[in-house]
Amino acid sequence: MTYRHASLAALVLALTACASSHDAPPLEPEPLTVVTVASPPELPPVMTSLESCLLAGGALVEAGAVHNDDTRPHGAIWSLAVAADRRIAVAADDGSIKLWTLDGFLGELEPGAFLYGAEVEGAQVPALAFLDDMVIAGDVRGVVSAWQEDGFPRIVGGTDPDVRIVAVAVEPTRRWVAHADETEGGRVMVRGLSDPVTFGPLPTTLDEVSGLAFADGGLLVAGSVAGRPALERFALDAPERVAAQLAPSAAMPVAAIAASRGGETVAFVTADAVGAADAALGERWLAAGALVPVSVDVTAMGGAVLAADAGGWLRAFAGADGRPLARVSVAAPVAVRVDTAGDLAIVASEDGWIRAFACAR
Image 1 (spheres, helix red, strand yellow):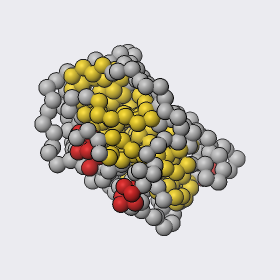
Image 2 (cartoon, rainbow, N blue to C red; image 1 turned 135 degrees about the vertical axis):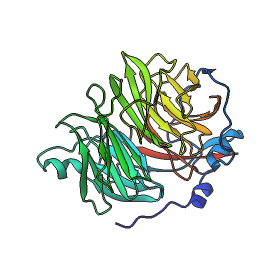
Image 3 (tube, rainbow, N blue to C red; image 1 turned 180 degrees about the vertical axis):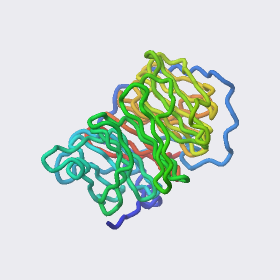
Image 4 (cartoon, rainbow, N blue to C red; image 1 turned 45 degrees about the vertical axis):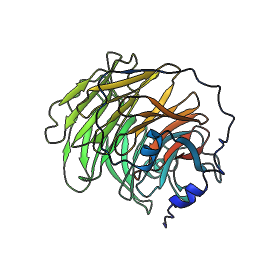
């Protein structure tokens, strides 16, 4: 398979032409309430273009788009991942995983047909990640697989048959994969792809696990305890105990989690709030109000938090104090990911559109 890489220069040239959304914008949202819990930290001064532009008052502007249903309908999008070279993986309702750049289609993977036989419909994939040239997929049948670019998979983990995988995360330096399932406590496992490392289930105190993220030598686990939001951190050199915990001041369980490259900013969303913590899981801020967030990501140096809001918005918040920075209308978003270079926020919508947003002043 030959990959074509999207040119940042081409994307910037396309900003003006693509500035309008494909759909009519939703009604103007009500103002949000942002409560800053801790004093704003000193974040790293060197920031990516997306961070620095947003913090300087820039606007989110559409820079490109592709549609997942190019040759046939695949149904609603389940999950999204973005590689360092801006390859985009999209898992859909029919069990397919399609690979894209913003220039066009690259290829298609069919984990359901390969792993379970042609007589079984595709297994939907709630969790996706890129690790080097591999696509890591956690599916509803309890299998975690690593797909090479030639389309041949390697089974790297899993649980009991038909026990849904709810989250995967990758640690690129050690080449480790973590995964969690829908059982009580999440049965969180960590496995090495280049070495025989395997440990877990981690002794989390969470009743349900909904998100995982590696950050700065640790693994972050998000979910709930007795229906309340909860975050935990495990040190990778001492995974037998919880190293830090946070019970955010939100009312709902944590639905998704993300962290900046060095772990300076840890962001999370619940069913009605967006929040952030520091590397030690000290709560920084919580934004609530007219919000229905479904996905979150953090720019590379932690300066901005991007949240996809099911009410029809992509929102940007300052990572240090939570002040709203920018928003742009996006129809029915289900996932947001910031590319590794930090120039683009890529959003997948339920209707099959994958849109890239840059910041312009």
